[in-house]
Image (tube, rainbow, N blue to C red; front, side, top):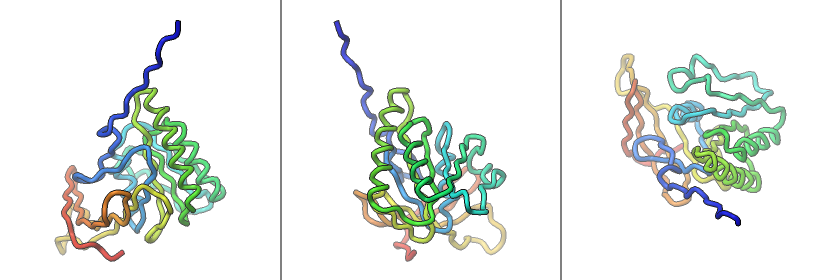
Length: 212
């Protein structure tokens, strides 16, 4: 006598990861972060997750993630740092990390936008990783692609640009000010916000759509 196989139902609310304010990112998909503050944005997203984080970087670049600089935003002890020797290795590592479902967050720093086919492969891997994570009672993986400038990866779920904004005060101020722009999303229009981040606080206000 065989017993029926029970599958854990997907929870739509659980599959939405908080960004800032009411803004969210859909888990089980791949999103793009671009602009001069993209690494800080990824670090702040990391600070709102639990568990290990796979962060994949080009191994031929001299720059390295600074644990001391990351500490105020997220725990660097959670990082699994991966260095790839080629562009193809970056995408392959991201695909395998997403497919495993073992890490709630997978970040890949790229130097140029991938074509549509590699992005589709990342989405498929994130979908497989979502099923694997649910079987273990964990959240679906969230994939982030980091790109310079305006980015431009084809087929991403959403594209976000973040850049520093002038401070509200002439002297030293505890808040960090940014302009956050949603350049692309599957079901939402482009939009821009003024973002102020202080110790234990964040303020998000709509602003005219930024030119980036």
